[in-house]
Length: 154
Image (cartoon, rainbow, N blue to C red):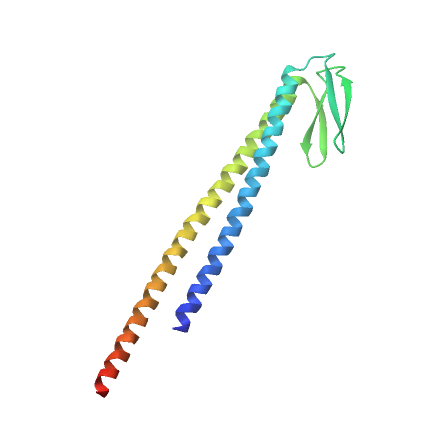
């Protein structure tokens, strides 16, 4: 009886670990989705702003400064790895769209990992159900044997 209980406990721990991993991956997807939305906002701003437009520039700490766009064709875009480059309006939009494509690929990869973990979780749940059924059958057999032995005494 102890071995079955131990197996159920081990399966339960595996399920908890999988659930935590899925939760972590879903958090990563949320972060990537937020990043995509910020890029969408940047693209929209780049496409709609004109030289001479007034914008609010974030300074950090929820402080902003009003500024006038001097030249919409001088946009500094992060290239990654702490590098940035000045780009034209069209090139900046293209760079940002490429970033979005990479984010989409990362999200798809993570969703695939989640699906694999969910399949593994389903398999473990099935094993747990089978182990529990086996334990119940063993308990029933033991009870029947005990009742049979009690009947022999009379």
